[in-house]
Length: 282
Image (cartoon, rainbow, N blue to C red; front, side):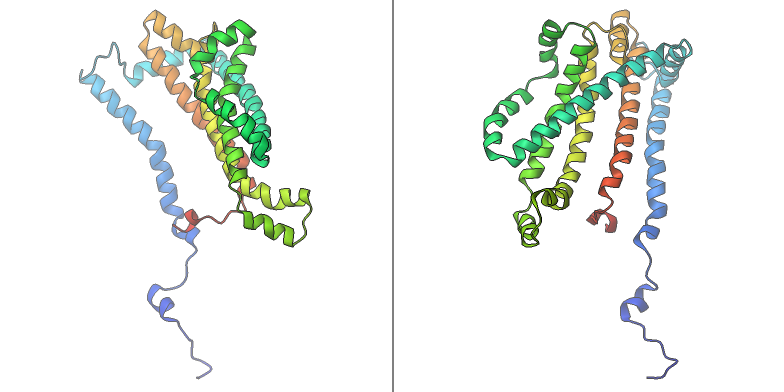
């Protein structure tokens, strides 16, 4: 074979030079991200057009322009900021307490079959109790102030985190533990280098699920005699016949929930940089 000749494999000859998958999908991913942001705007524009054509009752279903005007007025008076900060504070504190308790108890239940058999049936039963059902009990025990509201949110966050952590530990592949023992890893090293990486993905998903439930439970919490918070705006809008304020509060919940979920994903992303999942090559 001559020195000047170049060997080209059939795959290279047919497909051309290899291209990084990240480069191939860079533009489509950006386009999809933009489309994801444009979709709510397109739906709002369609909603506005339908209302302008009187195809819906604007008294009960006000158009986005009217909702925007109402929320802008609340923001100009400083009331919207107060309500948003009150809701975020309750969700943040309740989420921290519920996530910590769910992680610790879930880890113990997942690692110990005896503990799991003792506490899991009770916790699974309590998980089925609706959020509203806790309200009168927490008011009776803790009053109508912040403690009862935060406790209710913590309960909502606790269960998905507990289930995620306990289930992840239970489902760790036994062969991984055997490999760790073959390499004579100490128990702390086995936990750090084998068990923790196996549990982290499920734990982060359970945190996101718990955060979502925290925003759901905060509505029930703010029904408990609150004078501040987005839940209070819902109640006030219902009592005063303000559908634009009700819809504005619902949209505010959606936006805040998405932002908080995005921040949680961003904060926990460094914990999963080691993953080589199939999604990157799909």
